[in-house]
Length: 159
Image 1 (cartoon, rainbow, N blue to C red):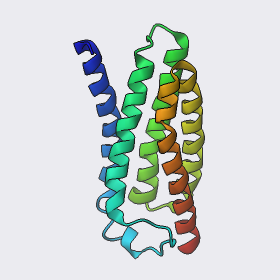
Image 2 (cartoon, one colour; image 1 turned 90 degrees about the horizontal axis):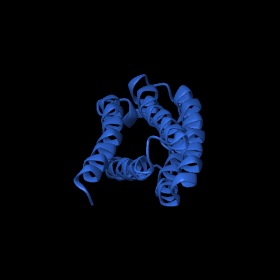
Image 3 (cartoon, rainbow, N blue to C red; image 1 turned 45 degrees about the vertical axis):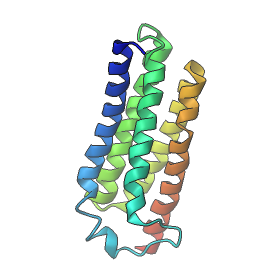
C-alpha cells in the first residue's frame, strides 16, 4: 500500500473515531448516574460491551469510507456517497447527545430511526461504488437496529 493510501486510511478511521469520541463525551458521565437508574429491557447487554463494539464499528466505517474515497473524489457518485456518509456520521453523534447528554430517549428514538435510514442509504450508495465498502457496513446497521430496539424499550419502560 502506498504511503498516500495509508495516510488516507488512517485519516478516514480517525474521522470516524472522532465522531465516536464526540458521542462519548456526552455518554461517559451519564452512565453511572442517569443511565444506571433506568429500567432496562431484558436483552440489554452489560455496559462494558458498548465501548469495544463501537470502536470496532467506527474502524469498519473508516475502512469503508477509505474504500470509497480511493475510487476518486473527482467522481460525482463518490462525492455524493461521502456526503451521505458524513450525514449519517453526524447523526450517529447526535444520537448520543440526545439520549445521554440531554436525557431525551423519545427524541433519541426518532433520531435513531432517521440514522438507521441514513445508514441504509449509505450502504446502498457505497455498495454501488465498492461492494466491499457496502458489506463492511452491515455490522453497523445490525448494531444500530439493536440499539433502536434498546432505545425504544428504554423509552417505554421509563415514562
